[in-house]
Image (tube, rainbow, N blue to C red; front, side, top):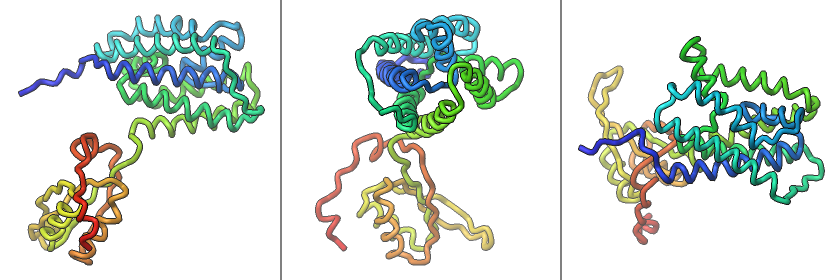
Length: 297
């Protein structure tokens, strides 16, 4: 049996985390800093320091994270520690690079466009970092320590830390800019979730029907998707029943409904959103459809 090493450092992970850091740094420099939008977490603190003391965020990001990493290294696994250190230095590196690139994005002073741009770019960058197991240090480490010693859930700690940092940011931005910062934060959160879950959510379908074999054959023949038969039992009759479970792409759902209806109009069908589907037909090569299949009906 092959043993999987959870702590293994993967080259692909490092490449994608680096790309995520480059995108996040681009967003911070050309959208947040350029349009006076605040941020949460360590990035928010570095923006406050920059506004008050004109200190480069590329340097303050490292200086703030070094003591946090020194304190929290024992609570991070080997892979997590390596990825966090790597993510921290890559973010600092790209912050330094982008600030020296003679580029300006002219938004005509439209703060809504700035919030949208920051949310989309920053969310995509952050999502890539998290999707491939990385972080950029900072408040994640503080939240882990709070959870370990004080029993405060990480999500709650991160929320309150962001709230405090955003409130302190009012020392250098006004209320309208803070309002647009909140819009940016909401969009960033949505894009992070979208990036982590993938481009689309697959659909898991459970079918209960006396004609399960006909439906199974039709799905495998017309959609060329694998089907799993589950043993079930009626809650009222206590009679054994076969249930069908199949996962399809969103654009195949209409065809699947048509197949089920033709085999058994009275079939019970439950459609479930699947945030990630791994395996043949999804992450592996999609089976090629036979040419005549589309014209059989």
